[in-house]
Length: 96
Image 1 (cartoon, one colour):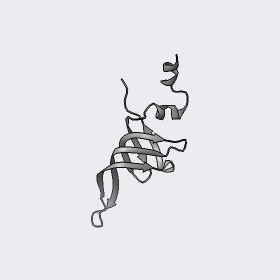
Image 2: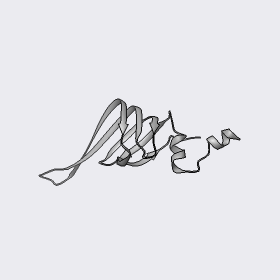
Image 3: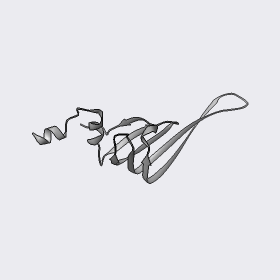
Image 4: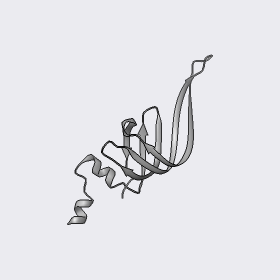
């Protein structure tokens, strides 16, 4: 019975708790996206992620043609502290 309670989702943060030590997807303000292993979190959604792939998307306007130019930058970070007030979305790994 205790195992069933540990694996159930009753509150939103329970879904995050079940994703500890799993790879998760985090969308942040400013068109930033993170994919990494969740090591710790708190009630404000401050998180410590490991093995992080950060993707930053920027949109620029060409001065001559006025076309949008979308650029993406990627970088790998061994450990990253994410402040919770910048989090828009947090998605756990797909479970089957």
